[in-house]
Length: 313
Image (cartoon, rainbow, N blue to C red; front, side):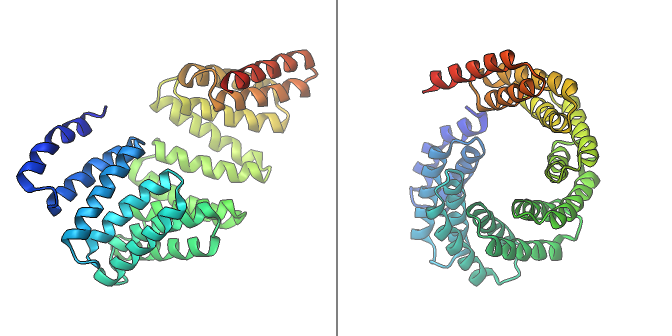
């Protein structure tokens, strides 16, 4: 268990006794625990704390108080992480409406609510609504913190993902390059967030079969991850697998094979032999074996995959 969560939980009974079970200060404390649980992906527990915090604020505050909107937004985030989108959407919408009425249409706090609702619309494929909200959130943050701030880049990144998913690759590339410039300015050239954005750019070029542009980006990502993480980290394997796919489709099968094999071993060691990442790499490796006229070896890999899937069932 996360030590911070454990410490907060141990103090909770004492706080409930001293403040009472319906005190707004207690709601703030419950929210802190809920957010830590959310970031640990302990979503069922997080939901319980967020619901309790919202209930306290609903009883103690006016219906249009911004803290009520904030509590709704937190609970909606938990629902969205659980893919309970039909429950999340009305909460996000209500939270945004409350905050707009209480704080005005240009308050910086609105950007977070807009970004969250836009993320939900992106997930369900509602492009126009997502784009409109991302752009509004971007403009609000830009007005308050400037063009080259990480909080602005966060929304730009999400907008870039939206464009990439809807095949607006020119717009996506432009946005991702802006994000990359901001991230490199803040973090330097070797940082996990920089690597993530480079991956997004490389995906755009790979999809367009522009391998000469994709390869150096993927090699740079691999270099960053090998430097910052352990050699057997799943993110290193992820980069190896991405490069292997690129070399595979480009016909450079010898290089692709060695990368597939390294990625498979790392994924097996870090995630277990039955993990979907292992199966995905094995499937790609079997395809490569067939391309290089090694049908017997490919059949052996297929049998291995079938055994793993049968064991899962």
